[in-house]
Structure formats: C-alpha cells, structure tokens
Amino acid sequence: MIAPVKSGRTLRERYVITRVIGRGGMGSIYLAEDNRLSGRICAIKEVYQASDLPEEIRTQGRDQFYREASVLAQLDHPNLPKVSDFFTEDERDYLVMDYVPGDDLKSLMDQARRKSKFLPMEEVLVWGMQIADALEYMHSQDPPVIHRDLKPSNLKLTPNGLIKLVDFGLVKQMAPDEMTVTVIQGRGTATYTPLEQYGGDTGHTDLRSDIYALGATLYHLLTNQPPLEAKQRFLRPHALKPPSEFNPKIKAPLEEAVLWAMALHPDDRPDDAASFRQALARGKPVESPSSALPSLSFESSLDRWLAGAVLALLLVAIVASLS
Image (tube, rainbow, N blue to C red; front, side, top):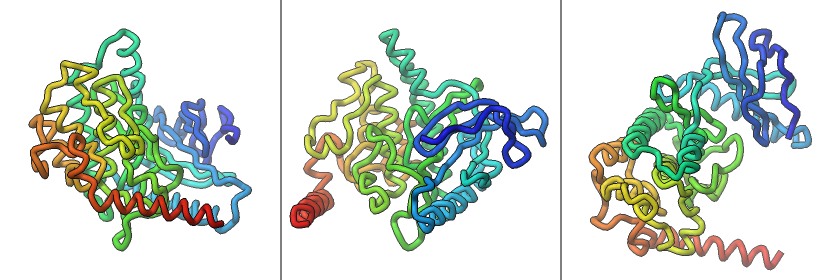
C-alpha cells in the first residue's frame, strides 16, 4: 500500500488536501478544499499504477482511467456524486467528485445490529428504489455504464435523505462489440458479487450484474446477515435462506423481489433496473419468468449455462495438472 498524500499539499495547483477519509490497495480517498471555488469541499479518489508493472500495462491502465473518468464526468443524477475533474500528478491518477456527507448504510446497519434491531423496512425499500433509479440512469447511457461494486459501504445517506452511490472503483462501460472491457481494479466484494463476475476481465458481466448486487445489498440491509456468496450457492443450490427467516417482518412480496434479483443465472433476474424498481414498488416481480422464483428453484435456472461453467472449470483443472 502506497503512502498517502500529506495533509496541506495542493494538487493541480487547486485542491488542498485536508485529510485521508479512505484507504485502498491502489490509493487513498481524500477530503480536499477547492481553492478556486471558495467553500467547496470535494472528495478525491486516487489510483496508483504500481511502478514495477511493465510500462505497456501502466500505459493501458492510465488510458483506461482517462476513458472511464471522462464517462463519469458526463453523468448527472441526484443519486450519484458529480465528477468534476480528473488528472495525473506524480504518477498517480486522481478523480475529483462532490464530497457526500452522512453515514454509509453499512455503518447504519451495524448500529442497528448492535442494538439487536433491524433497519426500518420501509426506509430500506425507499433506499432500494433510489439506487435502482440511479442504476437505470447509468445503464441507459451509450454505451451503458456498469458499477460492479454496489454494496452497503458504497452507499451514503445524506442529511436530506438522499442515497448516493459513491465509489466508482470498478466502473466499466459495455463496449458495443463485446460483453466487457478491462476494469480499474479487482472483481468487487464477494458477498455482493454475482457468479458471472468471478471471471474477472473475462467474465461476461452486464447490466444484470448490478441488479444482483443491489438485491444482495438489500438482503443484507433487511436481515443484518450477509447473503451467502454466489460461489457457495453454486455448490449448495438451496443454501440461501429467505430473508424472512432472519427478519419475520419482511413481507413475502418484498422477499420475492429481492430473491428474484439474486438469481444465480442472469437470465432469471429482472431484465433491467426499471423492472426491479417496479417490483420493489409493487412488492412483487413485474415479469417474472415463472411463478417460482429462480432462487427457490435452482434446477430451472441453471441448465446449459452452469453446465458450461462446470466444464470450463474442469478443463482449467486438467490443463493445470498437465503443465
């Protein structure tokens, strides 16, 4: 982990670093003052390309950063922080966005759990609809923008009640002629990551990957229990417990909507964020492919796609044993 920029330093002759507010494997997130706009506070995300990487890889990483930063700078939605600037200084890339005050949803959930309580179901539902609206907006861009790391700690509740999706570390665009493009870092957080995303840069993620992550996030917020990881569910098809087993106050229609979003096979999830938002609003799936939800009927949801995944894993194991 690289050393963070010291407090008091000015980046790009404009942004005065106040303090570190987050740390990660590829850099830090800073609170800063904008000396060109009096009183403006911003958050600056840092991305560091390791010096021991081949120059070609570092160049590709920087080009990717600029492509994705330029896309983010064009987004304008009430549930997304506005990206206002991006630049490189001392071999570090920086993304400047609005600072979002308030607690993240993981902190609020942890506070409730310590008191042996659940977050109010009605509030979680409203938050979920706001996030779904933000995803609908991102996914409607040309090309669509996919977040790929949606989770409670990346969602902040502002003092005026808005939810903000604050971290864009894994954001990617869907290229017209391919399912995926390279991502800035990692594969997301396992608890909220769909099965298809485990392929990393070769994984066939699409809009429905974000829908899975939102469903898993709502599951966690409603139950205080992290959902079983997708890889474990693949091996134990019926291991995922319905949310109402942890929180009996959860009504069946809301539970069905959450489990619909968390189907292992992408084809068995809502087709888009708008459909899922409507399912949350109505309390049931809008165009569910069957009366039984995929999460509760494993055999009907995984057919040839999962068989292909198993075959691929076996082939990798055989090749590894021969090398």
